[in-house]
Image (cartoon, rainbow, N blue to C red; front, side, top):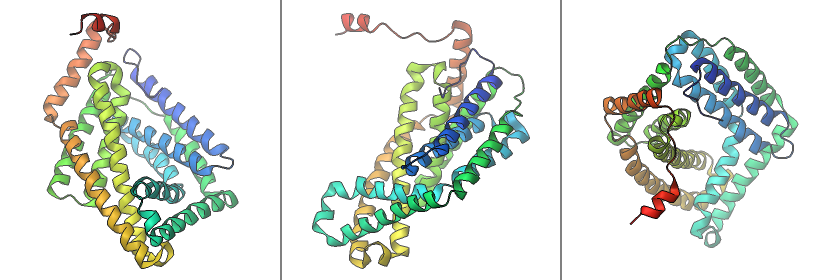
Length: 315
């Protein structure tokens, strides 16, 4: 389970979660069979969760942080080109197909055919040449060894609380930069910070599930939406760089029009949610999280309310 138990020793919890994620990533790559794209997607998710965990306690890890982070980052990057090919096809199907435009514009069918061909070729290449997978497995094993060397300074839960607060502050700064200059790069940077915030809220959710649960769900949905914004930006770059390979000029122009319309809509929706997720001043947020920790230490875990009582007395 991707959550730290507040009553346990922090170093042991961090290592437990990291090791579990590495084993899951290795298992995914070790036997992907006929569907390598799904195994790669899951493996990369595990790598990101490990990096999110390490970032939560980064100051406490000190010089131990960077080598481990680099190992899992590089393992994921070895597989990125395979992920991108399938992700862009999925994005096309999610964004363009529902509009019905594909049926009325032959050029769009050619764009999709080009994306599907690239996705198929990526999977076929992976089955023929496993060098990228072998590199990733080697890096995962190296990262696993480095986890054994992690040492967190004594201090109870403090390093994790400080990590969440730092992530929130950095995310708010990235949002302010995005509002000041809403470029694709700014949205991409903000998305990375939202994703870290989502991981950290998941890891610390047990402090106050009723309060942090909604923020966790909000951050997760926002990260997914911003991920689609980024995939649309990558698809635009592909189309503009190689129109002939992806449907020609006619299909390119219509696809870009639909992509830009959808991007604008998703960006507007994302900002409306982001302003609420990062609506607190960082100092106020830090005080609130500190208070949840103090309550947990004094009174123990939060207990769920009895839903039958709520229904009986509800108006």
